[in-house]
Image (cartoon, rainbow, N blue to C red; front, side, top):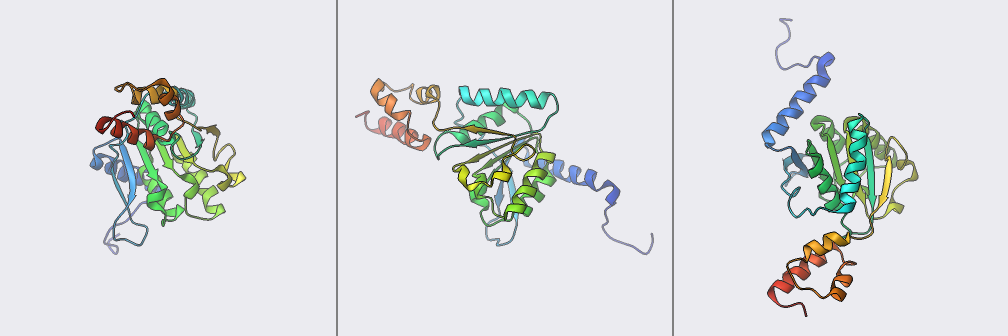
Length: 238
């Protein structure tokens, strides 16, 4: 119509338009793995995306990670969306397992670290996911997602419709409303209370560590084992 000049959207093709914009953002990031962050010096719901170089770095092959991937892959291959919650204390290897699964899938993967977006609303995060539509969605510290009970349930249901594979981690499941943990929101639960022994052994394979010390380290969080590696390199096992 001649009377209207300016940008416009054909809402009959709105979904296709969003997909095109989202895919262009992936191409601009030049990576199939991106992480969502908050723009600095912005108090509103402003989000930035950047390549996620941490997936593939310092990610050890583990029996637990491979088992989870294999299980999720069977659902993916038959066209069923699947969401998994990893439950365990900090440092038990949940993040490493999620990154390993993302590496195994090698699909468009979006990782969200909730502690970096603590002030953002669930609606803003959902808007970003709706735009980007990743195949694999990873959310660290899901129990810290900002928003009320209803918004959390709505967010989960929308995520499950948009993403083929969702993996979230929580430190304390008592912080999660029971209504969240049901098929269609969170389909599966798995407890991760310690790092796999084989992962610890590979982390320490360059050092002559007495077996009794290795047994002790297997109960330590990942960050402390890495610190131990640095001290051994600079000092000694003692």
